[in-house]
Image 1 (cartoon, rainbow, N blue to C red):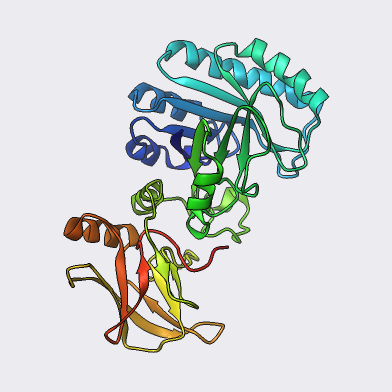
Image 2 (image 1 turned 30 degrees about the vertical axis):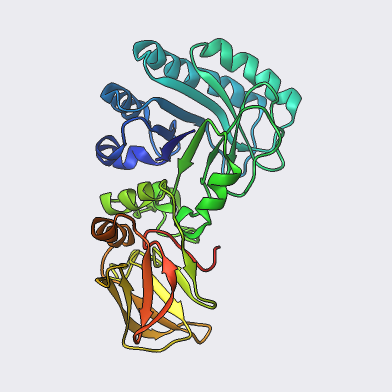
Length: 331
């Protein structure tokens, strides 16, 4: 399995995509949902860092695709085919309809036309749970399907499901054997949060290097995180786009009230502190850190060889956690 970044709106932050894509990973993007991505796709291919590029050719907000869309998808597939021939070291995939509800007979008809238009590219079927899988093709499942449906070839993307609020370790386990495992956050599509309903042309929540690094960090193993009962640690607090200094910084929520919470390495060194902020909506108390969770985890790893920290409140220990991952409850 290879990991990937699903920079679906990447045309809006092309320089970041080119700069941040790790070597040996997969790159995912929409063909033109956010604007013409062909120049970006070629820039990515020209770096020779990636080994797979998957392109969703058509998106529809209502998930409705017709016969006319097959013709449009074939035209777009021909352009990806030209890139596949120009950059033979890169494996290109084309997904004609992203998150469809289509039945197998329509899909087979589509596949025949797309494969003729782009014979050098691998065909990818990307259904919603209501859409059919294709037994002989790669089927890409998204975050709303926590386990793959039974099929010979599959891959995965968190697309539509915020990665940092999910039990990513469970997804990794369930999708063992996936060809590619794409990481995704709402800001990759310009939305500050999953519930951000800003119309696509007006979106401002594009990712930055810190977010990308924190998303990439989660492809690593979480390790032995065991929180105390009724304790919740979020590696990324909410970001509403209002320049709140707490946005996307770690937040700890628990029934204990104190001045601060300490994250402590095994040698006793305090790796980070989370300061008391106030009461959470359910009556528990909130504490916020001042830096990205993955940076705290990296500091712990430098100190002791791994990122796992003990949670200490008023001198008492309350379980362990990896500061780069959510633990204690998932959305």
